[in-house]
Image 1: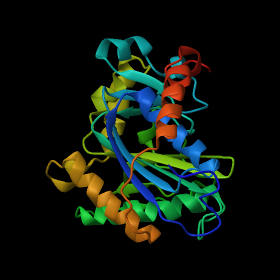
Image 2: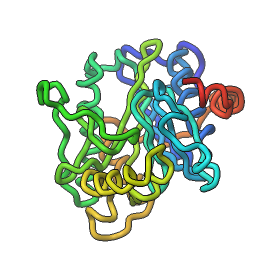
Image 3: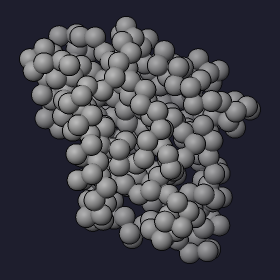
Length: 285
């Protein structure tokens, strides 16, 4: 285990790349926060983690009014977990996807200070990962560049519109990301869609039958996925390897394959049981 004081965040240090596989929603959020805390304490290096969700889950944005926008009963009936994440934004249905998280200091060499600029900096690696899969994606422009006529979100779902420097294919959102900063540490995580079902997502939103039809049609036009974009199915590991290589190249790091430390595992277990599995946290707004 890395001891306190081992990591000098003002100098370039080796990164850690972790594959924690499939976990339930509360465990996934607990691990992200545990790594963030360990980094803040100087007990972990900059970390990239890849993970999946089992069972499928809805993650609510930190400020989102969950029960107003998500049908909790429909989620329970479908066996879909619900969790509130640390990052903002709107609801994301995590099903057939690869999820990434990046934990790094605001003072990491070359890291832009603003949230918008750091999105662009980190998204370069995702862009290269998609290129390795055979896709030419684009980064969206900052919302402010569209002026006063920038379109507002059409639903409670994250993927109905791209945000600053998220990645699109033919103007359809492919990778949705969110970021939070605490104690000088950046946590950015996001969903890379291997496949996507608008009907599955709309089925757990608090919308009328008429709104459901309109929202499904809208999502079909605004959401991309790797299976459709590539014209073939891709495996979770195929995408993970491509994204690992892309992030390595963009961030100019050597691959250091690692694991969570014992302390991180224990802290993640506490956060999972006491926070992310707690109904008061999930329904706090």
